[in-house]
Image 1 (tube, rainbow, N blue to C red):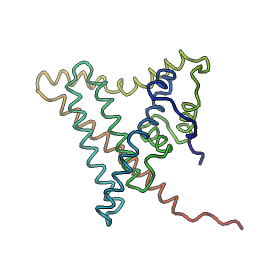
Image 2: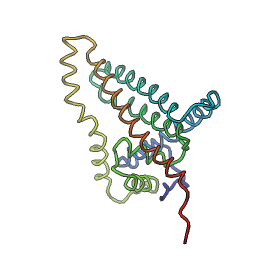
Image 3: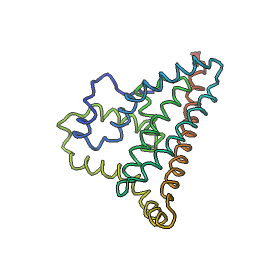
Length: 226
């Protein structure tokens, strides 16, 4: 497996996003690992120290319960943002989902601060269909220079499309929620909470499947040369 190229210094996230908007999902994934990875690592060490007999599955359930609840609370709170509710929900839930994935990695004994966790985030959140395409995009985002490759307008259009996709999927739902909220106060918040909780639950299931496989593969003895 080819690791993500991580030895090259990466400029502050705000600068990189301005210079290369087309790599927004990749740059945000890298930023999430740098921001939340140490927190997940500290949580794992603290929890395992307090509960030395805790199983991996038990820790994974603990993480899932915690962040599914947080996703629901974040969705409900962002539903009160009026016109900007879809944007607020996307921001809150995206970061919560990143924390969920990184804590699940730590629960399975994997390093949540490793650049490969950015690959996990991009695949598990379905930005990229597989590890190879996610890794290639991350390497390109890290290696890109301020001068770019002459495709600035293309990259800007790509960024708009990639960021708008989640909002487009929810747009119809938000219209219905606004109509329902007029008849039933609190309907928008309840629906947002339920939807975001369910999305976090599905993400957790995908992450657990991925990390179980990773741990199993790592435990297999290397084939011997004959």
